[in-house]
Image 1: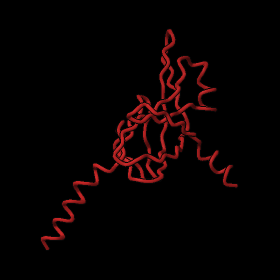
Image 2 (image 1 turned 120 degrees about the horizontal axis):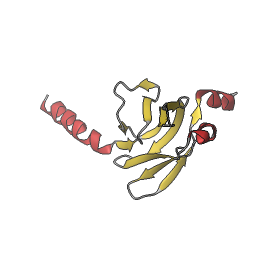
Image 3 (image 1 turned 90 degrees about the vertical axis):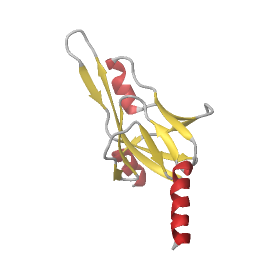
Image 4 (image 1 turned 60 degrees about the horizontal axis):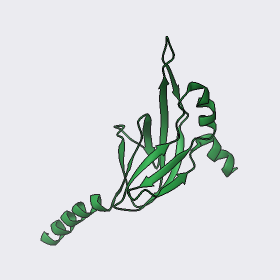
Length: 135
């Protein structure tokens, strides 16, 4: 009984240390990890070891003279493979003007940056784009 309790305690203490964390930029809303919905849309997510799929949406508000316009992307699926125990940031090449929005939606620039500044490009795709590849 005591050995099982000790093993469970050690597992609970080591699990958070071996997980990778990913911080999302402002405007990015996480929807799911590996298809499991995220209840609270936090900007820092914890990932288990191995390949993961993050579903996210990005929104940006542009403020013209009289009315703000909110632009939202479709849901993107992003394949990630993050090293355990490391911290990462997702960076987006977000448009600065509303007229750049369509180009951003067609080819969003995303990179994952580790704590040492190494940049790894990721290729976000919509569900429809993934289905086309599979067929």
